Structure formats: C-alpha cells, structure tokens
Amino acid sequence: MRMEVEMKFPVEDITAVAAQLSALGAEVTPAQEERDLYYAHPARNFTQTDEALRIRQKAGRCFLTYKGPKIDPTTKTRREIDLPLPEGPDAFAAWDELLQALGFRPVAEVRKLRQKAFLVWQGYRVEISLDEVAELGSFVELELVSDMAGLEAARSVLTDLADRLDLRQSERRSYLELLLEKRAAP
Image (cartoon, rainbow, N blue to C red):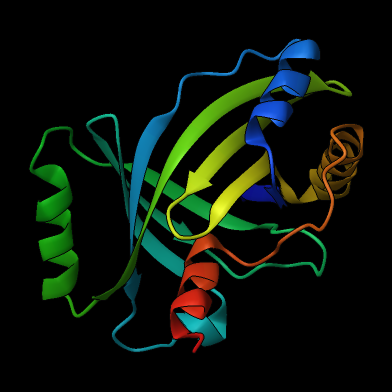
C-alpha cells in the first residue's frame, strides 16, 4: 500500500528556505499555479473520517486524488491514491460534473503557487513543496512515499531534514482544513 509521509510547516520567508535548499544542492523549480477542488461525500462525512477527495489542475493536467485518514499523531502520514485524468482544458469541468452527478458536493477550492525541489537526504529522495497558499500564507512541505515497513524511517528522515532547515511548528491540518477554519472564524 502506498503511503504518503508528509510534514508541513508555516514559514515567514519562503525565499530563505529556497536559498537553503539550493545551498544543499536542490534545484528549485519556478512557481506553478495549482487549483484543488475538494468534495464532500454523499453518504459519509469526510470531516469525521479524516479523508479527502479532490481534483487538482496544474499546467494543463488534472488529477483525481483520494487521501485516507492520518495514521499517526505527529505527521500527515496517510494512504494516497493519485490518478491522472485526461489532458485538455475541459477535463477539470467534466470530472467536476461527473462527481456532482454522483452526489459529491464541492466544499472549497484551494489555490496556491507551488515551487518544487528534490533533495537526496540520508539516502532518500525527498520531495519539497514551497507553497504560497491564497488566504493562508507560506508553507514548506516535506514528503516521502513509503510502504508500511518504511514509515518510521521516512518519518525520521523528514524530521531530520526539518531540523536542518530550522522548520518549526509542524502543521498536521490540510490546507482545506485551515482554509475552512479561517473562513468560519468570526
């Protein structure tokens, strides 16, 4: 089973983190806009089950992603199924229409500018996202994909890299959760 092991940190200066990554040998890509539309399930409450279903659009490509419940108290480790959808300008709208016809309801859209970097750290190729999230601010995500047997090693690698980058205050809530909480606040 494919598991996503992720740690996310709010940051004040994303440019400084990008410079640190470059100094460690990572190549940071130019920013790309990502649009994520999240859905509510017609028969169960994803808020209660800690699951998510979204369509992502980036660089003319679309992906349908399911994220299962988080399985530990310190990271965002969870099952992830990420499927590419047909390319083209109408794919996003067509899949949105299909999901709504099946009873899924759009909950919120998360928009961000994302830079990617990859860094080999302790023998693992860590995927790093530098995000400027509309309405929320700047974040750095560290991610590895693992099977169940490698989860503890993956968590350890990400924790060590976070320490090296001086990233503090890990945030387990998703961008969707943060956005909904912010919008609901008086």
